[in-house]
Length: 137
Image 1 (cartoon, one colour):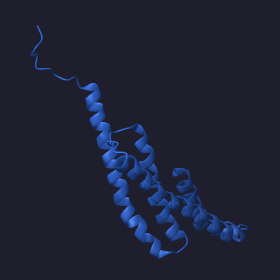
Image 2 (tube, helix red, strand yellow):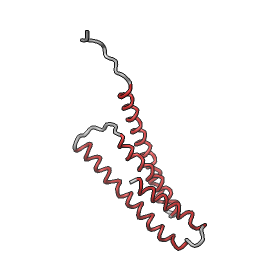
Image 3 (cartoon, helix red, strand yellow):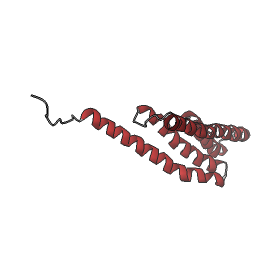
Image 4 (tube, helix red, strand yellow):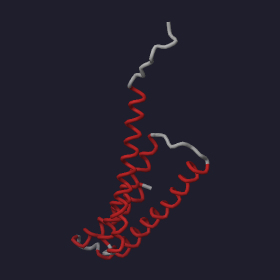
């Protein structure tokens, strides 16, 4: 998911900068089409990930606990925000700007929640527990 967002960001950056390069203007329609195609693929994954998360944690009643793999979800959220913002600017589609306007908060909350889970996990791992000493001789 992050790779598709990076591809979209690269395409949007090329669209914005290709006009200053001679001989490449013929590629702009191709770049616009494929960049939008990759953004659509990335957008299509969002509901699937949400549905799978609901299925895993609500239907199967799996508790949410920290795992390093959650960073693999946080990065694509941030990349999706950036690539959508850049794509909206490159293709001059102001109605797409609403997505990064709100997604930035979702990405930040996901990052903060994952970071908090990491901190709690580190404390549990490295800070020794003090026992009351009851029952020991």
